Image (cartoon, rainbow, N blue to C red; front, side, top):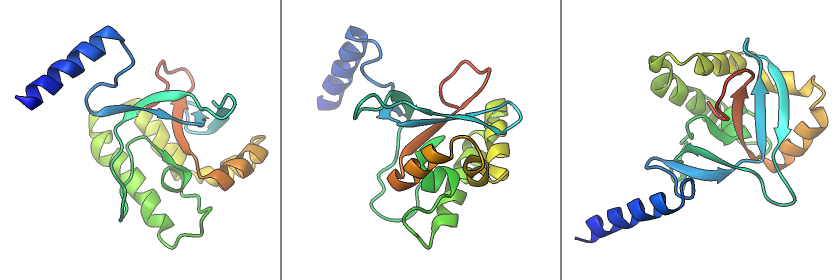
Length: 162
């Protein structure tokens, strides 16, 4: 009885204000940075989505609770998981980044989505070095201090996140 009432409430709320409630399995998340890739898997830009203290909200796959252990989010995460950066000098940084890649390879790659292949190509080509050698070096220094969430976008693709 309670579950059906909650389900009905969710349905009413989602119809009353489209976009206000995330669909099941998704969530709205403030993501301060978008890493933009070329269609051949190279860094094109880093976009700062913040206005004041707030970042733009993106509809992303629902994250898992990370009380302990290594659990990557799908297609978005902090720079430790997403890029293998190590701002907090963790001993398990390679495992964190591997978990991020593994989720993409297990859950997205079988669907043969071209943008996922482009992202994996970027992740295979030393993304941190690409960023450090780009015009976004100063922004990267700031990101390294913050360990922020990032999403990815491919130039020429319609969607904001992969």
